[in-house]
Length: 493
Ligand code: ADP
Image (cartoon, rainbow, N blue to C red):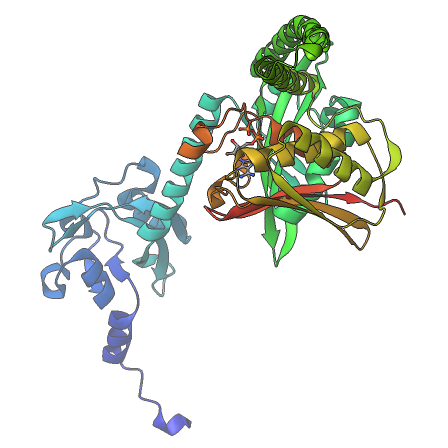
């Protein structure tokens, strides 16, 4: 555009430009009246007023200065200051409610405004230009965020847990004062991450915390329970739970909570001690019962009384069953998280599988169990415990499938590991229960499960055993069609 095309900047043109500008009003510096000289369209719209009704009137006649809560930011005081100092004054936020014509009521509005002095030739302030921006949305969003944070804080305090965030790259650790208390310090003690980590039991740090971090990096979920020692020497338990936060698909930090679970852990330990004691007490009479049954059956063999023989072998079967349950309880009570005492040896897992199938068939002679895979496969593991896992899979397959269906056991070798699976054609496992059934005392939510006796510890123990061997355990299943329970173990390299 050349200069010739530009319109001449007449007063009228200036006025038009002013009237089109966002949220502006020009008042004379004739305090205390502050006569309105000009006003922009958007200012009129914001304030639901009409130009000919307000121009020429005093600013405070039209907009009474009474709703702003803060003395300092009241328009009258600010206008006066602009005149006295000749300086621009910004009021970052103030409240001035506006009448909503549709709803017929006042609505809270928040504004940010700039008051600029305009000087005459003598250098005194002649006008004040007041420019406002409606920031109600921003203020409301900010207030909502503050309120949310406040609510979260109250919830956290009520639940007695402490919140924290760990930046992975920098290891910057920020946490609520409650965490210091959970670790036995004063709330304002500000122990460092290194200080707190040093309080975690050395075994748990190695076996639990570092593993949990690996799991978090692959699953996004961080969870562990460990023992900590307080500065006064006492032992406590904590549960840490968190989620991984990502930035550009890269893990950036972990956000989580810590809860003191000492009391419930103590209860659990007491319960486990009780189970251990009760099981021990039960084991002794059972062992002698088994002995007597054995003697009786030897002594009555010559009678060839089929009823007696049958009754004795059933009694023997029930005693063995009870002994197995008690063994299970004993194992259970000895387990600490991430800690199971293993006696490692090198052995052929296929042999073990064959033996376990034979033992199972002794107890359930009517069932058809087929084994696929016979070559020898060496693993280094706790033979007795792995045998218990296979035996548990087999007895579950028998318990949860009709007597006339076959059970298929497959031993397969893949890169670096062996996989043993036990497939049945039984009631199957619901998709939502596939993880839960490996938890302690969890029994399937199925009326058919209810008809079968059990305590919900077999799979929990199996999973603890396999995990402590760095293997994996799981189930594939279709409800009412059957289940395949499997585990893997690393091969001897
Ligand atoms: P229990 O058999 O004593 O209940 P487990 O820990 O061995 O305890 O199994 C937990 C649950 O998993 C069972 O209650 C059952 O619901 C489910 N389950 C285990 N094995 C099977 C299977 N082969 N088929 C169907 N459901 C099974």
